[in-house]
Image (cartoon, rainbow over all chains, first blue to last red; front, side):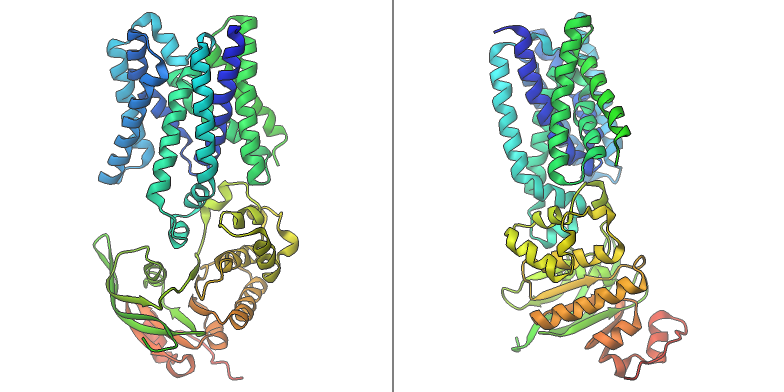
Length: 253
Length: 228
């Protein structure tokens, strides 16, 4: 199959799923946490690049480690989540640069969706469908937890269980996202489409639909511009996403 | 437990982060009763409601009648405006059939506004939405934490007449946190004056004297008893 088609399919799945997930993260002001997690994935990406295996596979355990660390730190200290995330993120970048081969640095930092294989694409598509179905199932409960943990507790919702599934989904998306936009830009993949959608939506359905839509078409336009300009695809995708956000401001309700 | 008693609290103490919030509180709530919790800011009123819901750890006894369902109306929900959501969407977060959603919206007088955005409701409409939401699964008990500020007089009147109507229709037991003495006189069967400990308990007209209120709030409270 032609390479560009594989990149497009892979990117559309990841972009749409990240956008959908972003709607949950935005409501809890957690979107920026995805950034540090992407950064923390860098050592894993570096290992994958050195030993030649899938960078998402390399990233995933490090993202899970990051989530666990932030979660533990939050229990142990009273520092805000962002501060903890910043500590974890800086450490991730620092460790990565100790052994990241410099000629591979660009791929690690801003991703490279233009080189995905057929197998990777299939794997990514299946994983994205799985994440989406989990998200759809836990969506009402997470929205409620985001609005008020007390209200969720009064409804006898098992907050720990839902947060665990939610964080797991975030971990998977970050691990997939680094493939598209690298360790530095993953937060944008999650945060921008959801913000764009927030500007345009009146209800929950529109909110998730448009976030997934803008997540997907940002990737499509980014890859097309890469074909035209030969500039790196990851940054182009994020810039397209930012452009849609700016346009949405005109139509903001 | 006696037949019409729905909640029994005995020697309840709550300590949060080393601070004693409630001490040795005992009371009972009977079925169909409106029980008001009155007290100054920081007296532990909201903490009491949340403890009854099982949100905070406590010492002492809280015994609800077996199988009782509780609805909760929180004081505020500041984060709800972060999410674009209609009234209908908000109710769908609860696992209830669409038909029940339509019925409850009609009951709280928002049947026509189901597609209205939560963030664009007036404070009175928002209060009614929260009440309807709390009642959507047909609980026998409603815990209602009144917002400190924000509802205009007209909105407030509708909220309390709605509560009164719902109570009669559903034989609800209501535990109410309020600052409004006129609401208590009109609406409440039993009052607990709370300032970390129970300062006084009893029927509103019997126990809400200028002296007891002064003890509760630590200063003179001007009020006029409503005689109907």
